[in-house]
Length: 137
Image (cartoon, rainbow, N blue to C red):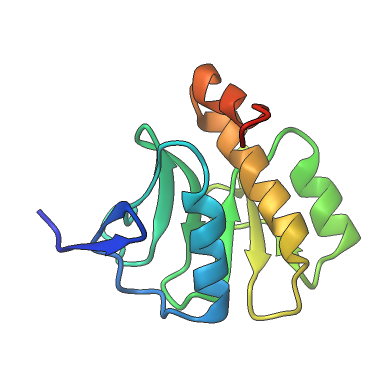
């Protein structure tokens, strides 16, 4: 079992690849604010990845310069066409609609938060996704 550390009240398993930059901290805060979201590396990587009930909704690159998230049909094409300096089609999962976002450029973090939430909604169980619409949130 990998090393664990605490981030707020959330247990985080062995994520050491992505430096604790402002971008990494912002992304972590966004992802871990979602119901039952956890941070755990993907495959043999050490960079953070974010999951809900074992399903990935955000992956980070080992160097911390990019993230990849699941997009609804048409989202990838629209983002890449609109802002190719910020968004790209990632290798391996791009053909499945996942979207890459560069964190080493000026990003609109409100937009990133919305895109991460949309990715979460696509993979989370319906009951958990519905909590995002709760007035208590």
